[in-house]
Structure formats: structure tokens, C-alpha cells
Image 1 (cartoon, rainbow, N blue to C red):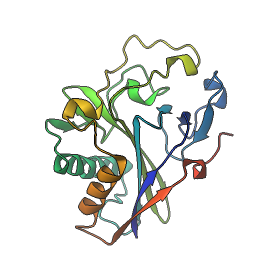
Image 2 (image 1 turned 30 degrees about the vertical axis):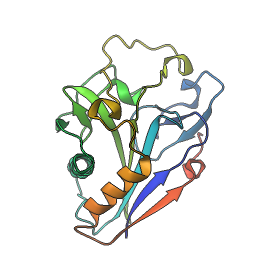
Image 3 (image 1 turned 60 degrees about the horizontal axis):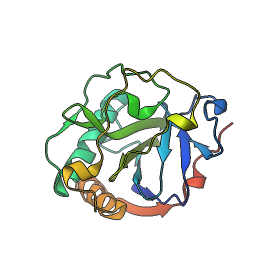
Image 4 (image 1 turned 180 degrees about the vertical axis):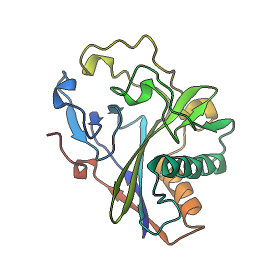
Length: 205
């Protein structure tokens, strides 16, 4: 069944995209790799909401075109956030070229959410025969600086980033947002919520 997965990191870590080199990270920080593509994300336990969404192949969200699936997933997260009190969010329907794919929050991609052009929700997807895994991240109050942890990059065209606090949701917990997403998904199919250790994400290779 569809599963909302709330991940509970206990230390700072960098999550690499599926094809990124491990040596992108140059500092002593825990590193894991997600199955989906895209750029590196810095996870700070007190500031990051990390929610994954697994949907089976027969789910209404499991579009054969991954771009369309990303847009549907983004719409589900938008509805969940609006239910929690967010306003003014837009779904990115055309990928925008920011600094490039090396750092997730430096650019805007399909299905991601923004507020007046500033990125709020980072979104990645991975497909297999059994279904689709969407992985997301948002920041609560402060946006941690990933710059010192990765190889020197030109970030002059980086997209700005907005934390949930600027939508009045800085005090909202990941559990509340995960439950809001569960409610949205469960309108169309059976769904459950679980909590998971992020170490279960694939380690870097």
C-alpha cells in the first residue's frame, strides 16, 4: 500500500543523488545515497523535515511519465501543507536551471514547491516495477549551509530557499506534516504512516 515514511535523523548528514560521486563531500560528515536522482541535500536533525512517499504501481500517483508523477506528488504535498496553514505555494511545472544538479536546493525541478520563486520543497523520484518512491526535504526555521561540506562550486546563480517558518509553520513538527500528507494520499487509496531510521537509505558507493 501507499506508505508515508517519516525519517528521523539523529546527526547531520548529506544525502547524495543516485549518480553523484562520493568525493563530492569533502568534510567529515555522515553521507548516505538516495535512489532518486538530483543533487545533494544537507540534513540537520533540528531543522529538516524529511518525508518519503512510496506508492505501488497501481497508485493514482504512479504515473508512467516520471515528470508527471513528480507533479502529482508535488500537488499532494502542496495540499498537505495548505491543510497545515501554508499559503501562496506554487508547483514548479518546468525545471529551472539554477546552478545545476550538484546541490538540490540550488535549483528548481519538476513538482517541487516554491514561495515567490524561493524553493521550499526538494523532491526526487525513483521508479521500479513495483512502484515509485518519492523523497523530499524541507527546512523548518534555518537553512543550513551545505557549502563548506562539498567540493568548491560556483553558486552565483543559486535559487533562494525559504524555510517553513516564513509560512508560519516553523513550529510544526515533521509528524504533523507527515500525517497531513497521509490524509491527502488516503483519500484515493489505502495508506499508512511509518517512521524509519535514515541509515536504511543506501550508503554511498
